Image 1 (spheres, rainbow, N blue to C red):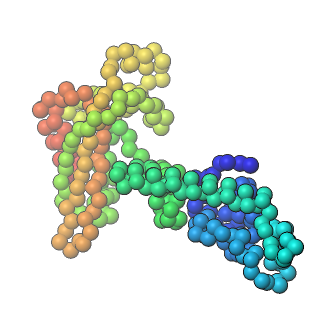
Image 2 (tube, helix red, strand yellow):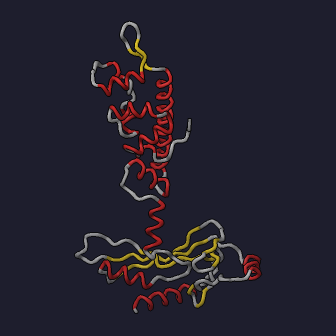
Image 3 (tube, one colour):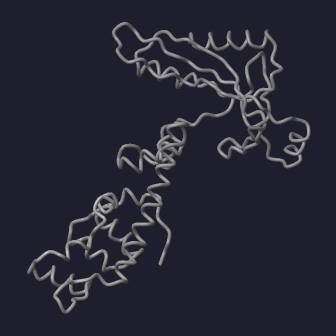
Length: 279
């Protein structure tokens, strides 16, 4: 018998739920659940005594057939559940309780650290239809032209953000945060990201580490240290007096640095950003 419980066991309903139960404990338990209209894992956990119905007096043919398959009738007329079915039910309930306890532990973790993929999946599985899956989110992002390339200033998208929200004024900010040193290959631009981005008059050079030669790539690894800092430019729109909702912040650019930029580099970069925003 398969001991594996799928991650979305608690969101299964109807045929998906019955198929899941059949794979664990067989068709007989499924028939008993169907007869009582127990159509989901949550319903089963709330009503675990599924054999209690056989103590009732009922002459319906379908009920008598299920009881005959599931029970042994004693000489005094009482019915007892076949031991195999009882073991299967206990096995099923134990597995579901273990899975439920695991989710409770995840819930405690999420309450302490409410962020990331784990939180999204926890909410999605416990509130079906409330959130899209991480895979669906990645698909939506890729189709929305939302991919951000390192060291690219997204002024065109910023203009669209302005137009969509009827904006005129914004605050701009720049800050750096520590990141894990790691080199990654971007197949869409044929570049390697993870090295400090060189500056030209304070402006980062986009796609600087592009190469089709292994020797050039090796030279890059030998002559450049991996960056441990990510520099980020954020734009916070200022809503007009007739707007009730504050527009979301906008990521203008992000790129890795080595903390060697001068004051002049920063001033030139902001002069560049200011002039681009005026166009």
